[in-house]
Structures are given as C-alpha cells and as structure tokens.
Amino acid sequence: MLAKMYSMGTFGIDAFPVEVEVYVTRSTLPHATLVGLPDASVKESIDRVHAALRNSGYHLPALAATVNLAPADRRKEGPAFELPIALGLLAATDSAHFQDRRRYAVVGELALDGRVRAVNGCLAMAMCARQNGFDGIVVPMDNAREAGVVSGLEVIPVNHLAEAVGFLTGSQPLKPVNLDPQEVFRSAPDYEVDFAEVQGQHHVKRALEVAAAGGHNILMIGPPGAGKSMLAQRLCTILPPLTTEESLETTRIYSVSGLLPAGAALMAVRPFRGPHHTVSHAGLVGGGTHPKPGEVSLAHHGVLFLDELPEFSRGALEALRQPIEEGHITIARAQMTVTYPSQFMLVAAMNPCPCGHYTDPRRQCRCTPRQIENYRRRISGPLLDRIDIHVDVPPLEYRDLATSRPAEPSANVRERVVAARARQLERFTRTTIFTNARMKRRHVKKWCRPDEDGQLLLRQAMDALGLSARAYDKILKTARTIADLEDADGLLPHHITEAINYRTLDRRLE
Image (tube, rainbow, N blue to C red; front, side, top):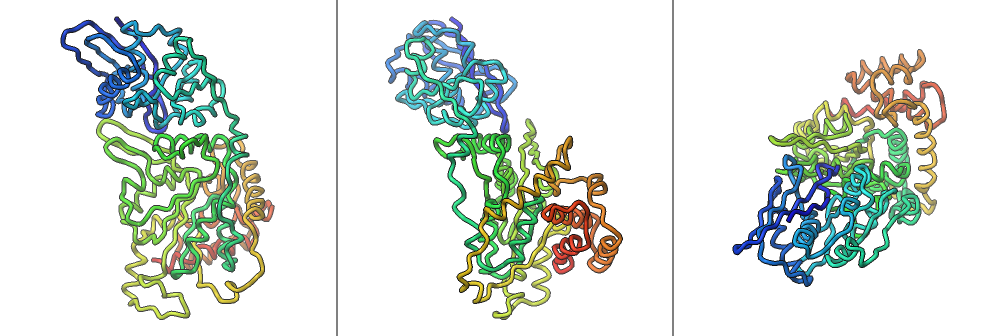
C-alpha cells in the first residue's frame, strides 16, 4: 500500500517542500530502502524509526518498505524526516487512519523511545510551509516558539510520536502556537554591557559612533590593555534595534546552524561574533563538504570582531573581501553552490607592532623597524581600503581610570545613531541600500559633494597620504555620516577633516 506525507528540507538558509512517499508490501524478509538522494544521517533514520515505532506501542507486520524523498534530485540532510517517515509507515500499513494529510507538513527527529527532538532550520521550514499553501506544520515542542512567529500558519508542537498520531487522526486535539514578533522583542533581554562602563577614550567612542551611524567598518590600533576589545563588545549596544525582517533573516541563519538558543523564538539583539585568530578559512567564511554558514554569516546584521587582525591567516583575511563588498558569501562546490547573507560591521583590532608597545609611552618597544613593517604588511592594501575608519587607541591615563564622573550611556548614543540612520533611510528611498557605507559610486557623486574648501582638503590628503580611489570614496561616505549626525544637508570642511583623520593610518600601515 502507498501512503504520502509532507515534510521540509533545507538548503542554505532556505527550505523546500519534500514529499515522503512510503510503499510497503508483505515480505518474509523484512527490509527497508530509502531513496531520494539522502545523506548518511537520513539513511540511518530507518533504524531509529523502527525502534521508535516499537517502543511507542506500534507493532508493524513483516514487510518490505520503500521510502522515497521527492524531489529525488535535491540532496536531503539531517534527521527532520524521521517523524514523517514513521507516520507514513503507519498510514501505509493501515495502523493509523489520518485525516487530510495534505493540510500539514511534518518535521521532527525521533528518539528510540518515540520522543520528538528538535531539528535545525525550523523557522525556514515554517516559512516555506506557509508559502506552499499548507494550513499548518507539526514541529517538535522545542521548535514551537521559533516556528510560532510565522503568522498565518498553524504551528502544532508535539513531544512524542503518539501525540503526532493522535493529532493527525483527530483523537487528540493540540493547541497551535502563535507568537507576536513585537511581543518577543519587548520581552527579550537587552545587552549585558554598556558604553557607560568605558572611561576615557572619548575620540575612540566618537569614531565608533560614526561607524555605527553609517554602518562603516572600523580598525582600532593600540597597545594591549588599552580597551580595544571592551569598546568593540559594546558597539552593538549603540546600533539601531533589529527590525522584524532583520531578525527573521538572522534567526534563520542561527537556526540552520543549530545555534539558536533552546526555546528561543527570535534573535532579538544584534549578534556579536569574535572568532579567535586561529579560525580556519571555512570557519570564518563558511564551507565544508556540505557548506555551512561561517562567522561572517553568523554576524549578519551585527558585528564581526577580529582581534589581533594581523595574526589571522592571509587566506582567511582575503576571503573577507567579497562579503564586505557585496553583503553575501558564495560557497561553490562540485555539486552545489550556496549563498549565505553576510552583511555585517567589521570591527578589527591590532597592536601597533609585534610586542604591542610601539605607541605606548610607558613601555619600551623591542621590535626592529623591519619587524614592525613586516607585521603591518600582513594586512593587504585591498583589505585595508575596505575598512572605512582607522583610529588610534592610546593607553589609558590614571585620571581616566580614577574619575568618578559617569560616562555617557549607550542609550544616549543610540538615539543619535538612530536619528542619523533615519536620515539615510529617507535619502535612499527606492534604492536597495540602507546606510552610507553601502553607497555605490553613483550615490557618492550624488549625495557627497564637498564645497571648494572641502575639495581642497581632499586633494591635499590624496597627495600627502597617497590614498587610493576607494579610500577617497570612503572619506566622502564617512563625511556624509558625520554630517548626518549633525543633521546637516551639505558636507562642510570640518566633516571632511574629521573623515580624513580616520584615514591617516593608511600611510603608516603600508
């Protein structure tokens, strides 16, 4: 007898519908065949399904079963098909009589005792179920809140195989889970750090505010203990809150990666990722035999912090150029090509020399000029050009550490950043960009026109610092952001001057 259930598979951060076809015949030599381009984890599902059925009280007759996962030309990964396969076997052997099976998609991993375990990518699966006209989706209880944010879809949570059987046969009504994304945002915890905890470093805080307002990448250079990591970890606290669309996209990435916190519905705060400099190329930008998101994608709509920037491998750093420039990363393999979003703010930190004390007036640098030059040349010019703002982070003075005067809290800075971002959204209406940092050449020419004094400053800077054409555009973009923070329409000379000061490290790092 033939039975059909409906499920969902994932590819990248998206999902696609899968028909689970089960055909059974009586046989003196019971066996099961799984076809439809399954990977190793899916092939192992048959043994777990049989054990879960027996331990749940369902005793199937001796039979030969063929399970087909259609479409057959798309690779199926993960254990999400185990629950629909079990239900399909029950339907094909007349052990259970389900109502209209076409109304619901079913996903879930089965434990040997019949419990239903969480699966990765459930948010994308729920969104795909809605797009493909399903009335609802049956999901593991641990995925209920994640899938429940998808409006217009019945999300049915189950803890056990028996509950799924009871719901689909109509003998056990289950209450669907639906959540309001805005309520999730309101009830989510805020950041645990704040700019108010950072004393001193006022010019660095100003540079971070400019970076946050325009979505610019930033490089901090200073000796150990100057506060570079502390400042970087607090950058998310001054960024605008995540929008619902940004949150959904970020949550999908964490969901397919298996990194969404247990019981979480959405990523309600901007992600902060700080990989160690020993991270592999695939770990940073994504990859593997079956490509998975890397750190650049996990930092989507958030901050990617690279401490000790010159210590990262040259190949890993150069691989950052595509996601920085285009906002996504494409991973090509012989049989597939996957694109993951990776629109992040790059915050990098480095010492001024190998020993770290070149700019520290209280400690003597032990490095030779050749060592310092070689250390700084580990960062290529093309990558450096893609970092909009460079700022020195000097060691803190005693008076800064001992002061009792409270520093400005993140909430106050965020208000100015949000206001500047609002000006940019208004400016870029009917375009696909949202921040000054993402402006193309034609946008720079249209909205970043300095006056005569500003043009003179730029010409002098180009001659004195030997800036590239990309660095020239970066200065104008940064100046536009500084003007937005002041609610100014045009670019004034002091906007240009401040922006040039954020590029003075170009010469020193070459």
